[in-house]
Image (cartoon, rainbow, N blue to C red; front, side, top):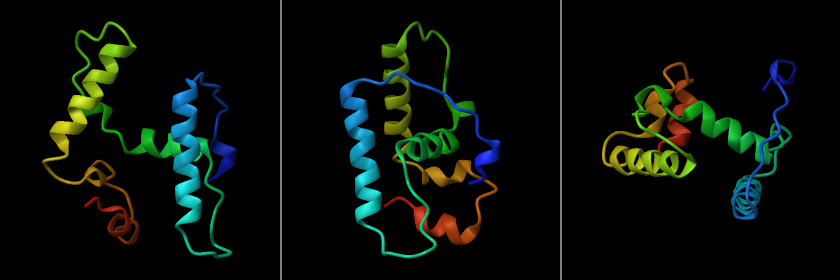
Length: 105
């Protein structure tokens, strides 16, 4: 990723959310082979990846009054989408060799 194009954003998260991000970073780091090509994966990397992959244009955003409503709507969206096609379909410009590596089971 080209860091010159990034804008710093501070986001307050709960202790539980921070723990989830930390565990995700640890899992990615622990399960990959050592290579000089490996980039550092951080909590910010995880957040950027989720934002890049989430199809906000497909989410029904009507009548969302608070964060709880938003969480329920996103959760329902994922439950519905899990029975359809893999999530990478939202990244039309993703390179085929990368797309084949992220195909969800």
